[in-house]
Length: 231
Image 1: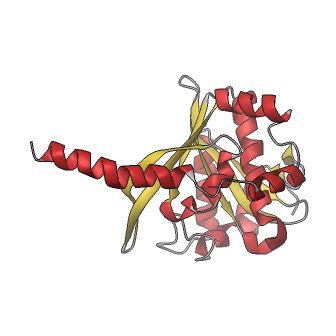
Image 2: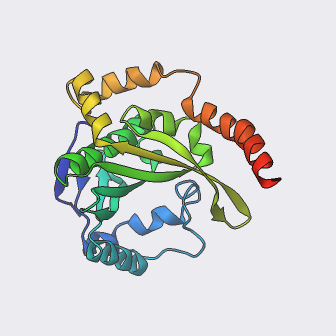
Image 3: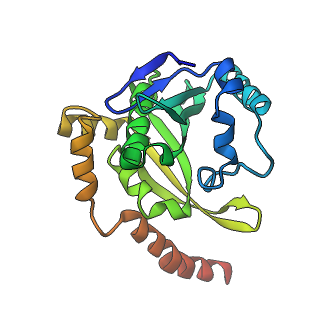
């Protein structure tokens, strides 16, 4: 089945999910794949087409914006703006991508998907802040690529990710409208081209800000609170 394109991109399109797509596509199965769902809190129980329909209808009823990611050929993920607060101008962001569908371009597929829906949030929905949480293991590569789109690491939520016997910290990230405008001023466009973004990824600093933040919290932070707790 073919979905209508809501946001057209360079190497991806973001498409409008339908009840039929939730019922008859393999969308539901993405959350049953341990590799795809590794860093989500899903997969405690099997997902089914019926549950996927319920999820879609709940998202739409709550005013969220789930969009299906297409690489111009296959449907391989979903990116969502949710908990949209038009008074505070803030929303949450999340993404799941089956990178096995397009291994050669998968980092750029995910990155452009974030760029397109973020731009829609800032420009069309009038948001000032888009935030989200990520598993600590995503600090190594994905978080730094997100920084190319203005998503700064703001801190760690300790032991927030709980899945089975795994209990780890979550990186809290956010992009604000001011940084979005700065990126456009420097590049001309928020997403100028896949080629240029790929070149930027190669030039990212080896010393990651998120590592420095983690070190500061583990050393200075622990020392500080050890003193506080002993008062």
